[in-house]
Structures are given as structure tokens and as C-alpha cells.
Amino acid sequence: MELPMEWRQWLARHDRIKDALPAVPLIVIAAAATAVGTSDWHEPRWDEVVWTALSCVPLAFRSRWPLGVTLFTLAGDLTLMAVASHISPTPAASFVALYTLALLGSRRTAWIVGSVAAVAITGVYAATHAQSVVGGAGLLRLDFAIVATALGRAVLNRRENLAAARERVERAERMQEEEARRRVTEERVRIARDLHDVVAHHITLVNAQAGVAHHLMRTNPEQAYEALAHIKDNSRAALDELRATVGLLRQPDDAPGSRAPIPRLADLDTLLGGFEASGLSVLVTRTGDPSPPAPATDLTAYRIIQEALTNTHKHASASRASVVLDYGVHSLRVTVADDGLPGAPKGAGTGHGLIGMHERATAIGGTVTAGPRPEGGFQVIAELPLSLSPAPA
Image (cartoon, rainbow, N blue to C red):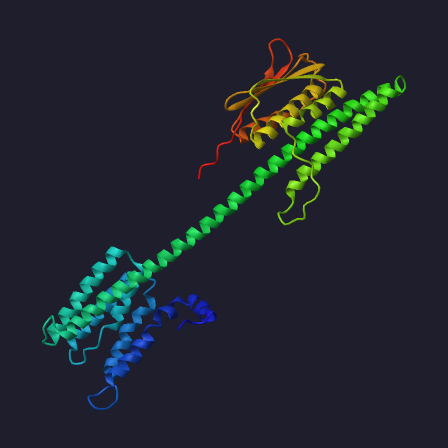
């Protein structure tokens, strides 16, 4: 029967009372055992009951000094058995102390003390009662000592196993939480990268086209009108891509809404049309066998071209750029170069665009190198796998 939670909490705050609790049933059993006669009940032999109670006094300190209490109670029980053989009480306090020592002490100490105690109790009882060492009463006391030690070790092993299982569960929960945080961080970085690509590209084009419209508004209203139309188209495209990117933040059970399709290399002409409308001429060359790349590679190549051309238009004094898509057997090589003049940037950059390109390529097992060309201008080269290998199990 398990004690109520309030009682267990109260006992946990009173170690001495908790340690002394086994003395209560031991004294009751001693009184009942000495009151049993051959044919009826009689008054208990109070001297044995008193000796049993006295031998249980050290048990109040058994959790603080398990070895000392075991040796003390064992010495007291053996002495009583030797000098008062006529009452011969069972050394129950020693058995409780042996159990406590096995539960709180080391395995080696518990079994050494338990074995010595079993032999000593059996030998002293046999000697003081003129019985054989292998007699029933002597062997019963030997068994009790061994069982008390074994029971203490079994309870300790069970507690250790439960603690280990609890630790494994907690470790698994911590790992799951860390994995969830890692995935959230990766998703946050990816979405931030997408937002950067979309905003930087379209806002750069809108800014350039607005400047063209402002410049031509008075001298050439027709071309200014075309520039304003391009601003409208780029603004709508920016909103569509932002809606698609932010839509990734929805929960799986959210109602599906309208989302723009994820851009691909097939949409490259639309992307380049926006740059050409803002004054940057772009030549696209495709070499090799244009094998359909994996969706992740398709999106990554598109975003790298978009970011590279955005940087060209925003930070370099370039009028022409080239995009080369070289399809190999296993990889796609993307080269974006411009004829910008060194040392003549249009504006200071933060470097986030280049970092984003590196992160996108690395995420699918590719690489990106970027730097000035010897003949002038800037060049970005990306090596991307055409197909993605499945993650190892």
C-alpha cells in the first residue's frame, strides 16, 4: 500500500523518523511472536520485546551512517545472542541495517559485510544453542541476511534503471527541442534570404525605373509612361513573390490561399526583361544538354542569377551583363559577369547578397565563387548539382 503524497513529503523532511519507521513493525512482530504458545496465546515475553526495541534505536541513523549502523546493530545482536541464549531474539534490526547498507553503500562493501554477517549470525546461534550450523533455525538466519543484502541491491538497481530511463527520456526531449530550434532557425534564415532576394531585386528595379520616368517625364512623356508601366509590373511581381514567401509561414491546417508559383529558370526571360527595361542589357547563353534540374537547384540558380544581376545594376557602373548556363553530366555551372568599371560603385552594399548566394548553394551541396575579373567587371560562378542525393538515414 502506497503512502499518500502528503505523508511522503512530510517524511522526506524528517529523515530520522523515516529511518526509524521499520522499528515499529519489528517490535509488533516480536511481541506477537513471543505471545504465541503451543496451544494458546499468552503474555508476551517482554524482555525479548525490550531487547528488540533497543536494537532498533540505531536504525534512526541508518541513512546517514549505513555502514556504522550495520556494524553497531550486528555487534549488539551477536552479543545478545551470546550472553542471553535463553531468549534468542531474531536479529531483525541487523537485517534492516544490511538492507540499508546494500541500498546506499557500494556493491563490494554490501556483499562483504552481508556475507560476514550471515556466517557470524549462523555460527553464533549454532554455538549458543548447541545446534548444528546447518540446522534449520541457523540456516534461516543465514538466508535472512543474504536476502536482506540481495533485496537492497535489487532495489538500488531498479532505482538506477529508472533514473537512467528518465535521463534518456529527458535527453531525447532536449534533443527534439534542439532539433526543432535548429529547424526553425534554418527556416527563418531561408525565408529571410528569400525576402532579401525579392525585395532587393524588385525595389532596385523600381528605383531605377522611377529615376528614368522622372528624367523623361518632361522631355519624353511616352517613354516615361513606359517606365511607369514597368514600375507597375515590377511592383506587382514583388508583391506576388512576397505573398508566396510569406505564405510559407502558414500552418499546415491553414486554408490554402492564392500563391504565386516558385520562380524557376524557365522564368528567366521575365526576370531579364525587368533589367533590360531599366537599362541593363543581359545576354543569356545555354551550353551542354539542358537536363531538367532538381526543383531546389532550379530555384537556387534563379535566385543566384537574380541576386548577381541586382548587385550589378545596383552597385556597378555596368551597361551589359552575361549569363551562361553550362549543363554538365551531373552539375549546372552558372556564370554571371558584367562590364562594370572597378572603383565606380553606385552604392554601398551590406554583403548580405553574396552571403545569401553562398548559403543557397551550400544548402544543396554546391559552391559559389565571386570576385572581380582581370579584364574588368565582376563575376559570379556557381557550381550546383543537377540532382540532389537523398539524405543518409
